[in-house]
Image 1 (cartoon, rainbow, N blue to C red):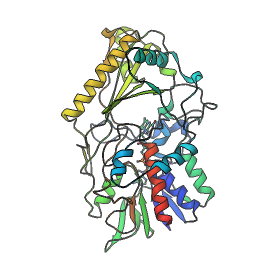
Image 2: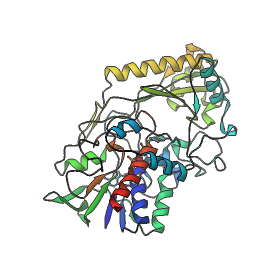
Image 3: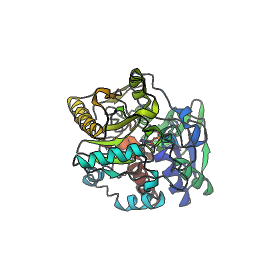
Image 4: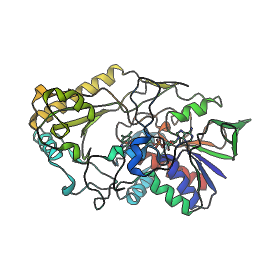
Length: 395
Ligand SMILES: Cc1cc2nc3c(=O)[nH]c(=O)nc-3n(C[C@H](O)[C@H](O)[C@H](O)COP(=O)(O)OP(=O)(O)OC[C@H]3O[C@@H](n4cnc5c(N)ncnc54)[C@H](O)[C@@H]3O)c2cc1C
C-alpha cells in the first residue's frame, strides 16, 4: 500500500502513475471535492502578512492555474543528475500543450505583444494546457474555469480512480509515523493509516511542517517566485475578459506576461476607471530562497536582488505599456505576492535525487523539492518529477 498525501500537481500524478502499474494507492486529501469553477472558494489565507496564493481542495492549486505550461529548472536538475527530457515530452503530449490559436488573443494582449516587439523584446505566445475548443475567453482561469477547459489535477485523479486509487477527502494529515528510520504510515488527528511507502505532496508550506515532526530539518529555505502586476488605463480595452498570461517574455531573472489584477482597479478607480479600462503586465522574478516556513508562519523578506529584479521588470513593463498607448500618469503596481511556494525540502539537502528523505520509504514530490526558484510556472516540472519518481518506485 502506498499513501499519497495531497492531490495537487505532484500528488495526483504520482498516484495515477503508480496505480497504472498495479500498485494499491490511497490519497489522503485535506480539502473537499469541488467543481473546478468553484475553486476560488478554496483559497487558503495564511495567518501571516505574506500574500501567498494556494488552494486547498481535491486537485490542489492546479484548479486556479492560468494554464501556463512551461519547462523549468531543466539545467539545475540536470546538474544534480536528474534528466527530465523524456518526462517533459510525455507530459506535453498528455496535456496537449500548445499556444492558443489567434482567436483566443484579445486586443489588450495583442497591443502588448505588438508594443513589446516594436521595442525589440522577444515576446512569444505562452504554451498552455487549455483546450481551445472548450475555452471561451473570460479572464477567470484563476478563479476556477467555468468551462473546465484547462487541465487540472482532477483529470489525473479521475484517471487514477479507474485503476483503483482510493481518495479520502476532508482529511488533513497531521503527523507522520516513523520508527527507527522507517516510515510506518500517517495520522490525521487520532486516525491512523499504516503504510510502508508514504509520498508527501501537500505543497511547499505543509511538507516541511510534517517533515519537521519526524526530526527532519526542512523549511529553512523558501521561495515563492514573487510577482507584481504593473498596469494603467486604456479605456474600453476589456483586457480583464481575455485569457490571462497568454504571452511571455523571458529574461534571466524574471519574466513578463500580460495580466489583469483587481488590485489595479482599487488604485485606478480614482481616475474613474472600471475593470474594462485597465491593462497590465505581470513581473514575476526568480526570487532568492531567502524565506522560511515555521510552525505558524511563512516568512519571505525581499532581498536586494529580489527588489532589483522587480524594479527592472517593472521599468520594462512600464515602457511596453506606454508604447501600447497607456498614459504613464496612470501607472500603478500591486503589492508583491507569491503563487509558486517552493524550495522547502530541496533536492540535495532534504531529499536525495530519487526524492527520498533520510527516513526509508518517505518520499516528497511537490514544489518543496525545487533546489532554487524556477521563476516560471512550475506545474509541468512537478508533474515530470512525479513521473520520474513513479518510474523509480516501479523499478
Ligand atoms: C492563481 C495561481 C495561478 C497559477 N498558475 C499557474 C500556471 O498557469 N502554471 C503553473 O505551472 N503553475 C501555476 N501556479 C502554481 C501552481 O498551481 C503550483 O505551483 C502547483 O499547483 C504546486 O503543486 P504542489 O503539488 O506543490 O501543490 P498543490 O497543487 O497546491 O497541491 C497540494 C495538495 O495538498 C493538499 N494538502 C495540503 N495540506 C495537506 C495535509 N496536511 N494533508 C492532506 N492534504 C493536504 C492541498 O489541499 C492540495 O490538494 C499558479 C498558482 C496560483 C495560485
